[in-house]
Amino acid sequence: MKSALSVIALPAARMRPWWLWPNVLSLDAPVVALVWQAAFARLLAVELGWTQRGLLAVCVWLAYCGDRLLDARRLPEGSVDSARHAFARDHARPLAAAWCVGLALAAAMALQMSAREMLAGAGLLAVVGVYFLLHHWQTTRERAGRWKEPMAGVAFAVGALFFVALNLQITLPFVLAAVAWGGLCAMNCMVIAGWDRECDAAMAQPSMARRWAGMERALPMMALGWVGLVLGAAALDARWLPLALALAASALALLELGRRPEMFSTEARRVWADAVLLTPLLALFL
View 1 (cartoon, helix red, strand yellow):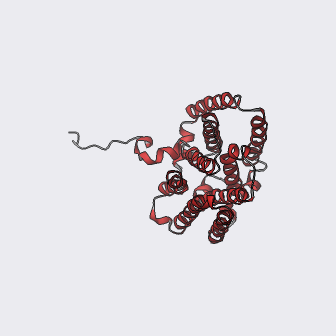
View 2: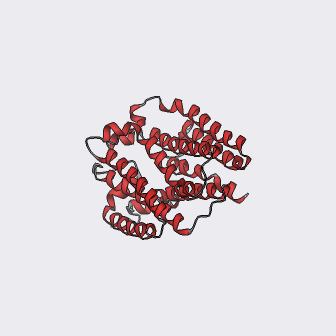
View 3: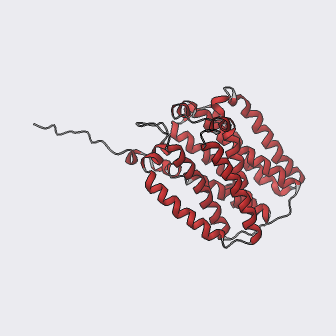
């Protein structure tokens, strides 16, 4: 007689909660980039078209998805304590196909840019290319990995502000706020790297956290510095105050997540680390 009760093994994809899918599909980073781009553009009265917004979203997705696909080639067989990397390994072919479609779409949108934007974009693309070469070429990846999180955070921040910066006259308050935004992005990457020390070691992934045992102790001073910079921008120009408060809230939330990682599961922590960067939405709708 067969038991009336049987255990059905569900595929890993069906077991993932709905809120994890944006992270697994590399969609969370483009959303964060678009939110901060919109916040800076609105504050500075910079008009951005849908092509510029779409190009930012697609390029950020291409960078994140491409990075995970390259990382997935080195993953060991069996279970991996990172849903986003496991998904990239298990679905490498369809993701690679989607990546090619995204690249074609990005090229089509880039051709609609002005000559000045295309030239500046080529420079930014070269910088991103050097980043990928350093972090995925076997000869340099270990050494470059010591600075992976700050490099990734700054590159992300520059990309988010790329079109805004090209369409305004650079002022000291903007520079202060932009540096603070870049520092916040780097801090986000460092907090996640601190959680992922053991996971990165198991996957042979170099990171600053693996090289710097006391990294977390430096995060409060970093956050204080970034908040101080953006408050300085607000002191020079009151328009920056809403964005300064949003950045301060994100920095404090990141510190709290880093200080109490046991509040959430491993994957939930990674999702929240990006979710707390959406605070400019409050400034946009106030």
